Length: 68
Picture 1: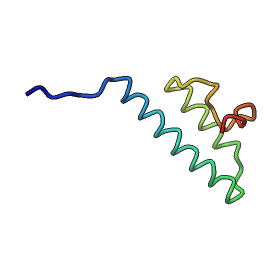
Picture 2: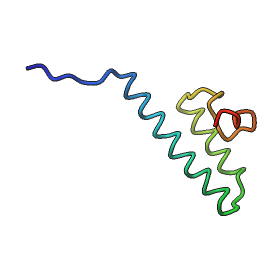
Picture 3: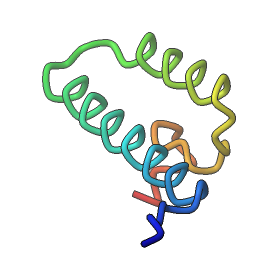
């Protein structure tokens, strides 16, 4: 019996969504506790740039807030 495995694109999508949901939870804590959002936004930018995620899905930018 052959063992089926998921397509690589499915794994990429699941990982991307996990990263996004984790970052959104941390972003909510930044605002909840009144921490400065600048350093965390820079960290998100650098991380998303290094893994090559598309810029239009970056929820912490002001122009992306409408997509939330």
